[in-house]
Length: 270
Image (tube, rainbow, N blue to C red; front, side, top):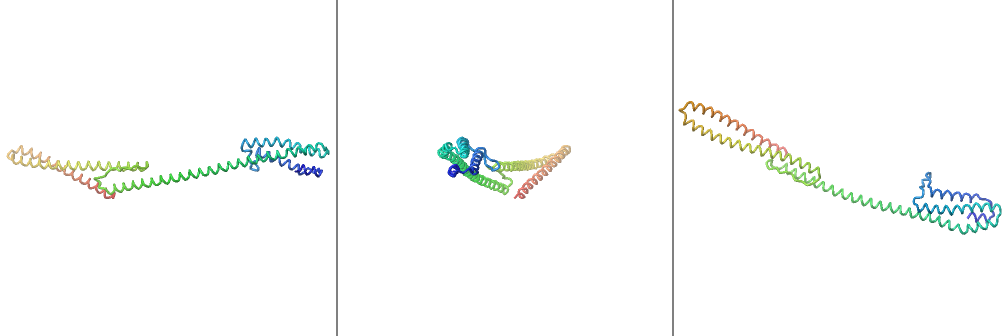
């Protein structure tokens, strides 16, 4: 535009054309190498770089002819001027077309980048939705397992201490560990109860046997009352038997107390 205007006006005012040359050079340089002060990155793809290089080659020739045009105009070299005007007419459209390709490549690149960001957002949203749904399902399962655990715990608390059964639960590791601890306590309580009941039974049997044995001793003493020496030894044996019977009775009472304490422990748990 500046060339045609100056040529028609036969003007030597080159200020506008010099500014246009400078602006075009700066624009190409920024597109190729970027500009940190303007926060503009350099060419993002190899295809854009190659296209900018192609424009640079065309522009160097065009710029040289533009400078030659200014010199020819000052020198009034008509032949040179006609050549440059003809060159400008033919090459100007080609240069603009190649510059337009740079714009098109940038547009495609930005659209692809925008599509990538959109797709990434969709994928991220889908992932977050699935993760949130999975978290809700896991939370519901944990709540169900916790409810199951406390129901079984409550059932054990309300059960008779003599009929405690181990807790069976299939849940998270923490609940399984708590159930194992409860089962360990139940096992120990059952063991103590079994042992105390067995000991109580054995003491009762022993007491009955001693009672029967004492009765037999009385009958023997009655038959041997005329034999003082034998009676004396029998009396000693009877004393020993009575002491043993009393010890067994004390043991029986202690076992009964143990049973009462275990029953009291159950009542307190309730």
